[in-house]
Image 1 (cartoon, rainbow, N blue to C red):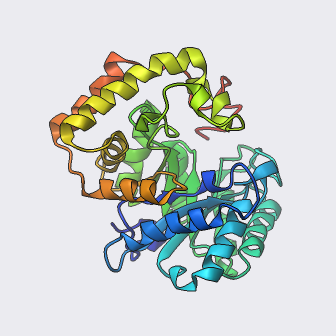
Image 2: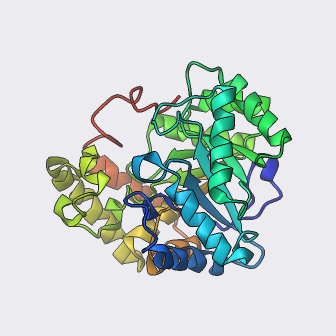
Length: 338
């Protein structure tokens, strides 16, 4: 598929690769080879001429460190040929080691400089996006600041994240947006999600759909929250709380029934469902494992009928999801839908 905005000449695979969980737990290098194999497998599985859309973040590490970018620097140092075969999207724009958005010109510059420093010149940042919308700074000003950084040669394309459809339209009016990153899955398909997707399709903006597998739960690999490692942050998420988990397992089982009927995995069903919502959709499931990455990428070849797409929607009608997307706090406190 072609990306949107100023990257409309770039062809990427229909399925991207989210890298956050590769370094969300520790900063050691002991898992490098497993992560490297997962990245390489995804790239190597793509059609000739297509790049792998990979998604990283300035704060994807312990204590919101640059561990993920440092891992990528080690990867591209070892496999320099893969730099041109990937399209690197990086989220930044938060206050240093904080979850609070800060779209001031000073902080946006600090953020992209920190990102480039962590990459050590091994890979150019293709797309930079503020991870959340800073309500203290008009989106028009934030996009103008990022455009100024592009003019200085710091990165190539602008993305947006966790924004409303109206905010996306306003940002795109200042400078063509290449991709908007929002959560999309069979159980994260709210009304505002639909509006953002519709607006992106209209404006030729790609939708980088993160967590298409419901942070892994919809893939059906866990039977209880206890299956997660003790330090796994998902244990604190609302949908993973024991009382919600037990209810949401009905969704997981219903999706598995549909997947089994189709002869595919639950993960492939969910990824294909997201991918076929609109031509602009680019699911970016996360994986640190080679076999899982290949399973995810193979979903690009899955074609769902209109009836099958509707059947997935009906699962959530019959079993409404229980629990919020993150913690049990308001969207405003999480800086969502800015």
